[in-house]
Amino acid sequence: MGPDVMKTDVFIVGGGPAGLATGIAIRQRGMRVMVADSAKPPIDKACGEGLMPQTVAALKGLGVTMGPSQAVPFRGIRFIGEGRVAEGAFPHDYGLGIRRTTLHQALADRAAEVGVEPLWGSRVKRILEGEVWLDSYKVQARWIIGADGQNSRVREWAGLDRGLPQETRFGFRQHFRLAPWTDFVEVYWGRNCQIVVTPVTPHEVCLVVTSRSPQIRLKEALTQFPEISRRLDGRQAITKDLGAISALRIIRKVSRGPFALVGDASGSVDSLTGEGLGLAFQQATALSEALASDDLAHYDAAHRRINRPPEIMSRILLAMEKRAWLRRRAIDALAKEPHLFERLLAVHAGTFSPRTLGFGNIFKLGWRLITSPN
Ligand SMILES: Cc1cc2nc3c(=O)[nH]c(=O)nc-3n(C[C@H](O)[C@H](O)[C@H](O)COP(=O)(O)OP(=O)(O)OC[C@H]3O[C@@H](n4cnc5c(N)ncnc54)[C@H](O)[C@@H]3O)c2cc1C
Image (cartoon, rainbow, N blue to C red; front, top):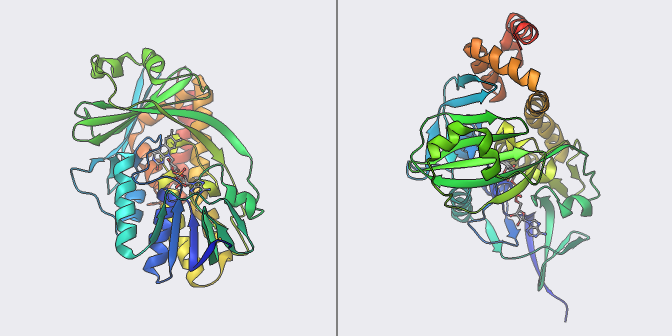
């Protein structure tokens, strides 16, 4: 006897943040939706655990809100490196630091509340002629969404281009039990790595080291940043070392026939932008709108629009990461022009259009980059 067959409007492969957000957005438009993931909530993953203000807003739009015991607000970004410090506050709203597992559980709870049908602990093995094959049954779906992360199989099964990873780096994450010392997310720029420190609960901070080497771990990286070691004051990490790949991968076509991709499956940006989750949540809403109007071409266009600014920001940050002289000059210039840093964050956050930076400001920043002392 063949496997049992079920039916749904939309089937989502992958119940990470992108898959769950997409499931919620689709349910909000009244369609029937199933989400399958080989793991079970709360699913953990190496992440900086910082949600930018626009990410928090997108989450709110999905009906996901966090209480003060679940997340910690931060009001801007601080760059520390090359003997310089520059910081920019967000113009209106705040970002949120949140443990990845807390975020995932909140999304899973909201998905259950709006009627997403979860298939936890279920691996999708293949997709054939509109039918999704799981272990002991098949599901027929009108639309099939790949939210299965960077190495998406759905992308392959749909015959969509995987794009070229333009820059690949490695990130490792650990948590430490101590009260956050600042309400900024701090980015420490070192010789061959960066450490991002995010307050995630009133008693915990998350540290992520990113570099081009899969060998560089937090312990070793900390030797470049005595100011962080001083704060940690000999404390041991309370979570184990969890690693993931941080890739700038640009994919221009993200739908084909009944298939669409969302989240990291549809391309990714460098983790230093702190934008991966925000992209996934914005794409989720755009995709649900396109499905409701039965036109995935709209989603392709919206996806390009949503991804473009963080792709540009990735290139800027990666250029700083590669060149000490540029890093020095950029941090120096931003330290001297804090309003410009704030404007840049606002453009990055989508609150202002790049035009609001103004020719004068761009000229000023460029001039400082050229003329700052080495
Ligand atoms: C080091 C690092 C730091 C980062 N820091 C930040 C940050 O501070 N802020 C931010 O916004 N973003 C950050 N990001 C980016 C963010 O983590 C990703 O963009 C996000 O995880 C993408 O979510 P996703 O759901 O698309 O993919 P994933 O989280 O990878 O989820 C994919 C899911 O699909 C499931 N799956 C895969 N194949 C199958 C299958 N065949 N059947 C069933 N299930 C399957 C997997 O089990 C998994 O749960 C960071 C990334 C890295 C690497």
